[in-house]
Image 1 (cartoon, rainbow, N blue to C red):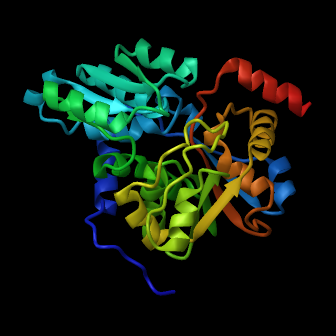
Image 2 (tube, rainbow, N blue to C red; image 1 turned 90 degrees about the vertical axis):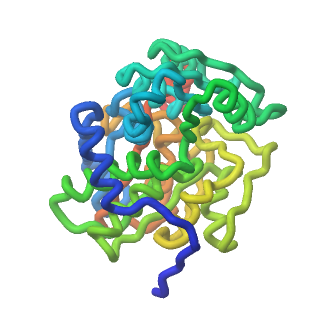
Length: 330
């Protein structure tokens, strides 16, 4: 296959290894879980990277800590600013607390109350906005300029991407067998771009696929178009963590070179996968964190006779909603 590449300076595998050293002792080395029941459903071997067990309940802590730890000490008292629907918010807030950096986090008014509450619990100031009428990037840029703060983007930042890539690095070190393919959730693309960089460095023939909610499948459509395309702002999904306007510039450049394609899942497929993960892996996964498993279990990618890595990215789900999902499934 001809290698595709866009002209942009993206993070390297060495950056991911450096990130792993920075987060060591702070981030959790999450396990690969396996279920005979789920293996039988797909006719192959599914290995689930359990990032809901990560600090703050999602992979986002990795990229946040890697980025914040590189802010010069003499600039830290000016604080950091981030915008996020919830998981990056918590990751930045927690990392800032550990490093003694003041944090302001811009979150949508309709973000899950659990994510807003958790972000505040780490000592961050939460600034709410209307995602349909206001521009979170503009709000963040204005605050950063006014206070001289460091703006930490949720996905389109080389330091963040390198930190998220430690998920893939850990997978390469945990595998005890072959690797045929990886399915990873995609919002803006920070996780999958970092994971793809790490996986393809070690397993060059492994395919890496993006999984997204229907209506927010901008990475998959961008890969087909050969350029970044956006999502319909009127689309809706229960996957609140996967609702970006479009893939990031850095993340798409990496994806265009390394990804094999995109998969799109429905909200019903997401609910079913959430229940199965709880019942057969004893793992609580939020809607946006389960789309990779949903794609595999519903046959959107052939897993028969193959070893497939599934990345479950986060577990910050509203308890009432999660209970409704389990009740509906049974």
